[in-house]
Every structure is written in structure tokens, then in C-alpha cells.
Length: 216
Image (spheres, rainbow, N blue to C red):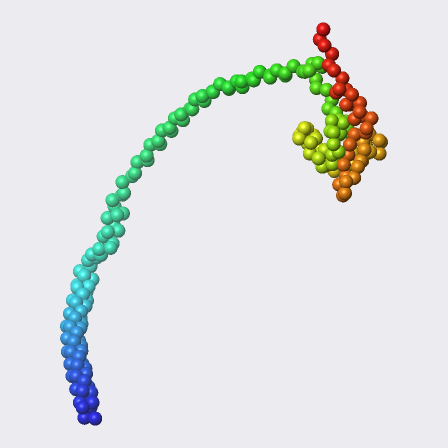
């Protein structure tokens, strides 16, 4: 306990000494300023007394001495201010006329009308293409063995790729030829095959068997 109280006591004594010193300095400063104020008040009182005496003497002599402000006003009233010359009107600037540069219009180049190609003559006109029925009948006559609808469709598509022949259409057309006796149908298992009629096949065979005539 004594060890902890000793530092606290020393710190308190330091604060007391500091506060006491500041208080004494403050009092001395107040005394100095108070003395200056007293001196200034005495000087002010003397000036006021002198001012009163001077005013009384002025009134007794009947003199009216203008103050600085009135003197300045009288000077400004006596001396007229110099007149300002009006500035001569500025000469108007001449407007510059812009010359319009007329650009000649460009003449549109006229393209010569393209000549239409001469129409094809009747001699060079292509003959009408055979119908799908004719193509199928010719194909069946040329074949020596029965063919299925898929095989016929594939062969015709390869021979005429621009026709866009569909297998379903070929099958329907073949059935129509069978109904008209212009084709024969045979069945092998689940597959259906088609051939040309026997009479047409025989006629085609005879035509091929005939010898070609001599040129003489």
C-alpha cells in the first residue's frame, strides 16, 4: 500500500505546483493589462478635455473650420469632373459574299440495254420428257429378270436424277400397270417383283434379234 500511494502523492503535488504557477502568471497578466487600460483611460480623458477647450475657443473666435469630410465635398463640388468624349461609332464590317460554286451535275451513265439472246428455234427445242409410266414400262421391257419396286426406283433415279422419283410413287404406278395388264407381278416369299408382259418382252426380243440392214 505505501508504494502505490507515494507516486500518486507526487503526481498530485506536481499538478498543484503547475496550477499555482499558472494562476500567479494569470494574475500578473491581468495587473499589467489593467495598468495599461488605466493609462489609456487617462490619456483619453486628457484628449477629451483638450477637445472641449479647443471647441470653446473656436466658438469664441467665430471661426468655422470645415472638417475633412466637408472639405472633400467642397472640392468635388468646385472642380467639375471632366467630360468623357463619346466613342465614335465603329464602322460596320463589310459582309463578305460567298461565291456559290456551281458544280455541274454529273450525267448518269446510261448502260446500254442488254440484248436478249435470240430465242431457241423450234428445231433445237427439246422433245417432251417421257412420263413415269413410260419410263417404268421401258425399264421392265429392258430387264430380263423380275425387279422389285425399290430396284426400279433406284435405277430410274440414277438414270434421271433431275426427276426426283420417289419409291412410293413407283410402287403405286407399278400396281396401276398390273391392273391394266401392262405389267406382271410375282411374289417370292415376302418380296414382290414386277416384269413386263410376256407379249411385250417377246416383241422386244424379236426386235433385238433382227439383223441390221446393210448400207448398200
